[in-house]
Length: 177
Image 1 (cartoon, rainbow, N blue to C red):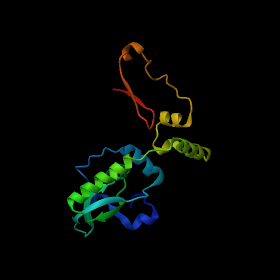
Image 2 (cartoon, rainbow, N blue to C red):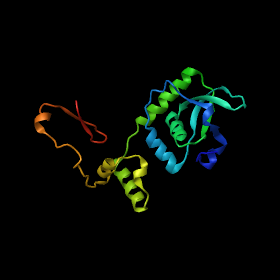
Image 3 (tube, helix red, strand yellow):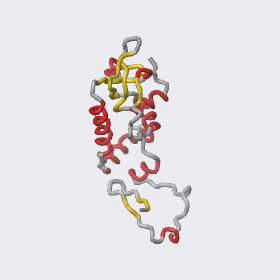
Image 4 (cartoon, rainbow, N blue to C red):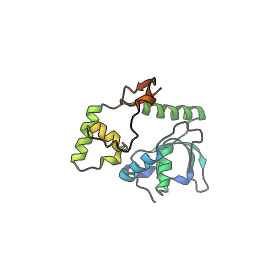
């Protein structure tokens, strides 16, 4: 089996070729970031699959309702199995769960001071924090480091005159509105 699945999840290993990503998945995940995480940590939580039947070998088949991007990332890494939990929800319940699973994740927020403390701690333990999904610029902002902005175009006030800026209350990012 080509996969790095946490030992307690091994009994849940399902062949990727018996699973289908949800064609109606409304969430657009970052497969590259998930692939990077799987490469560093392996799979530590199962995907959730709505059982649709069995294949010729009697293995359960189904549509992934939570973990579509995890399955895609694992496939891109050449894995042939992922840990999966099969459920027998009707189509409406499966769709509702998929939406709730994605929405509850995006409603979370970070305690910026505590996050920075954790990142510094990992750095001092020689853990490569660039493997955790933040960009170099985000890490620099979080850790209060200097950022080389030479690659960015110079700010031109004449172009920006009259442009209303909106700031994200969570992260401070600004954009023109």
